[in-house]
Length: 332
Image (cartoon, rainbow, N blue to C red):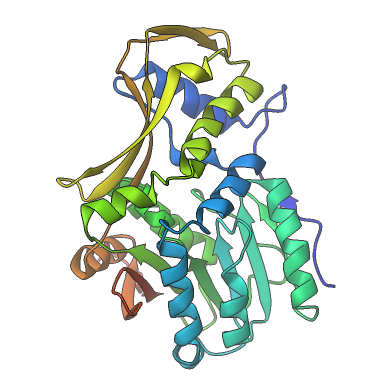
């Protein structure tokens, strides 16, 4: 087994709380309408709940993307080549990763994730499956540039960003993330790095909303776990029974939105600050933007990546795109 113990790059305060988490929550609760970035869903319990979501009948993206990774492995291998370091952004449990690693025979694997315990558990499991592959887990916020472990920098690199997580961000933030990914991957010797990214497609409203409001209530529990985390880590007093899960399709912005909706007037504190919500007021917790081929290309190009090849599943629900970092030219 070749696995590092992991590199922790999360900035904790004197109470052991992620400074960015505290700042984002307080900022989000103070603004109108209230909103908290979706990346804070993924503590250990949130990560486990999301893995349950991926197995639900209503949640098609995982099955569709897995189909693409299985059926197009030979094409990936031809275009990507062997001997690259695979850097996975927001790796979670890495359930799709073996399909890619088996196809391209990489020189190293670097999973980046903000949920440290979950990350290390997954890294150990993956290293057992690939005992000759160096695995270097890095606990980090991949929204910013991350320094890769020693020995990985000189290798040619392939970024891997499955699951259409890019859709959780408004376009401006998504562009910033794509640029930070380019900075993290750096410049390869004589060749620009590559990025393999999952991007969900626009489809019928009923199918989209069902994927984020399943009949078993797992997505609702995932949404509500954010409240549990805030109360636990930030000394919050948010009454969980006063909030309900809601998922709606916003056609104007081509995205599914998740909210926590107050079912009564409430007052609460977080990190010593006082807040209130009136009945019907919401905390906007997630966007999941859906793409057309054109909008996907425009986003990638704005983030510094040139699309090379696109694949879709048999039912045309989901796409996986291979892109190359755009050559950076100095201004004249």
